[in-house]
Length: 134
Image 1 (cartoon, rainbow, N blue to C red):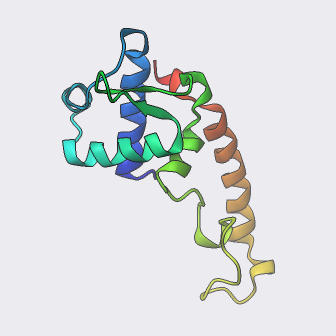
Image 2: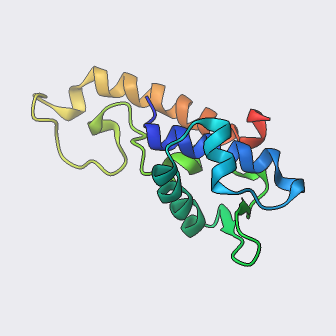
């Protein structure tokens, strides 16, 4: 399950992609169109700006895509927003050690099965882009 933050980031990027040729998009336009709380959206937009996916147009105001919509994968957005990507903690690439409730990590068939599931999901997330939302 993705986080609400990631969901809002995807929705904001969709709006920016839709309006890409019309110039910068104001926060209020995204808030109105996608029903995202303004203060939360502003925090997300700052993160997306720092990641290089979008740019803030200081002179004109508003935001626009810095990267084409077909080059922004869902996986990238999950990574930028800090969403958990692993099916279970021990299948995460950042996990080291053994689960507290596992007798042996090497013998855990659940972990093995979920790592396969996760690999398929990561493949789909890396191939699905903001362009697919349009």
